[in-house]
Length: 91
Image (cartoon, rainbow, N blue to C red):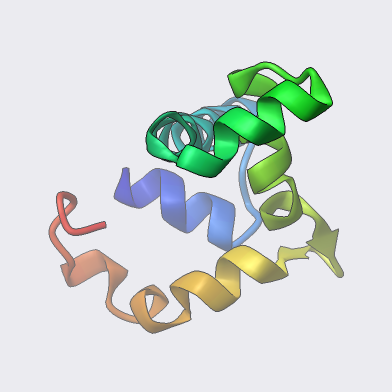
């Protein structure tokens, strides 16, 4: 997971790595949606599936700006400098 995260944050990733990371994020998003009381209303009103809503929730994280995923980098900025010494379970 460390190498995958570093690759995505540094924007030196192939589509396989990027797709794998997006799926990890989508999976976490779906878990949050499943336990959210608000998501039921959103799903009913929009007609979206949980999977579609999960993708919508993470979409902005993967909008490249000048060759970087700015939102992801902001979120992980504290971890980037110590990612190699951080245990994978913590990430």
